[in-house]
Length: 68
Image (cartoon, rainbow, N blue to C red; front, side, top):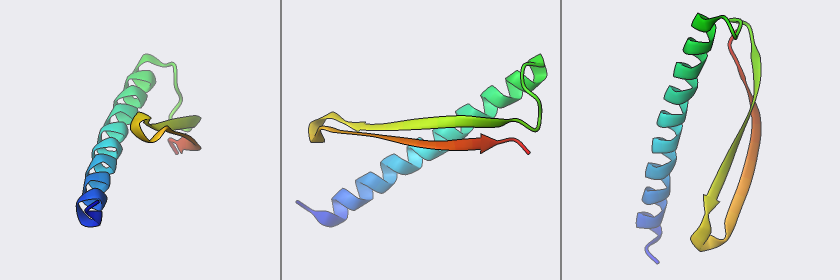
């Protein structure tokens, strides 16, 4: 195994997930606020599941997204 290549591919994957996840959350929040279904000071529970079937890995991360 090439540790450098492995580490780089993990970082690239996580960057893509982070950037795209942030965009999706921002767009959904903007739509919900515009529709009046969400207030601008909301605290939203959030979960993220990381799955790598080839490694038999499934890990859930819990957190919170706050708008204020």
